[in-house]
Length: 211
Image 1 (cartoon, one colour):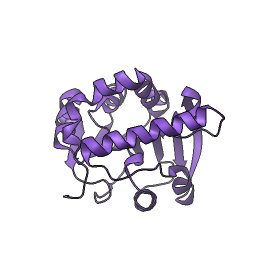
Image 2: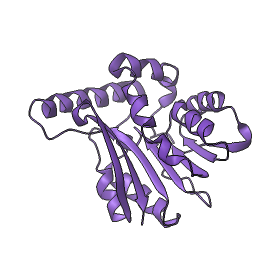
Image 3: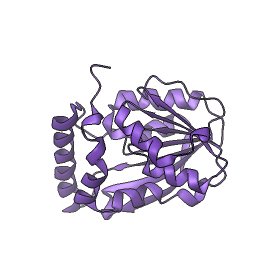
């Protein structure tokens, strides 16, 4: 774990840092597809931070059980406090790259998390999850992207570079470029069934289904 970034350093300011940088847009992006998750019963949530998304998901789905994984003890503490229902929530302080996929998972959630991994790590994670889930499993993903548009694209690239530099200083994160989760998901047998964009594509949410 010594090589892992230390997100404890930013856990208690994470929510406010979001609002300062992009207002409510990140949380609106996370929750855009909530209405399409009403039939899910067993979620694996990787790197949800302080738990704002998972708390909404559990309130909407009173029968859903969730396993939340994070390397930050402080993030998990905030998540448990926000979600409340200990009977339906299991938390694991561990690397998402090492945790076992619980039996019966029908929803995977990665909000603004895969951008903390290298492409090789994303590929390995997606392949391992796919191997331990059934057809019909949903993967809800939100993240940053550099739009292929004049003006917006270069500005987005500068913004993302600044984010990586800031998180590198604050947490020790070594990753410096966005991976391609879409390619990894397609190679693992998932199909995109919905996409939503904010800020001309700088941030997006997608919902994928395993075929």
